[in-house]
Length: 94
Image (cartoon, rainbow, N blue to C red; front, top):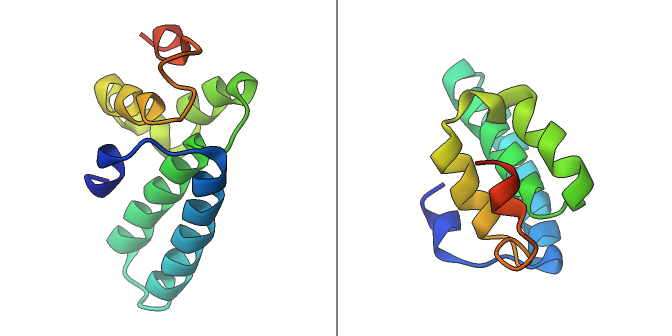
């Protein structure tokens, strides 16, 4: 998660991220460690922040694993979207 906070992510970059995290999640799943599966589930949803349409973002953030994260953490990832600062997306989730 810390690594993702360092970069502004475009939609194209988000698609690559979603694909990579999916492969990591698949590999980690084979270890059969529930705590790791949970962490990678959250990481998968975080990667989805960068590819969903702004209209679908609210449901992504309020349902599933991301709903368990604190708002500041979630807002930080929304800000790292390429359109996060210019579209006012962060203000929607204050």
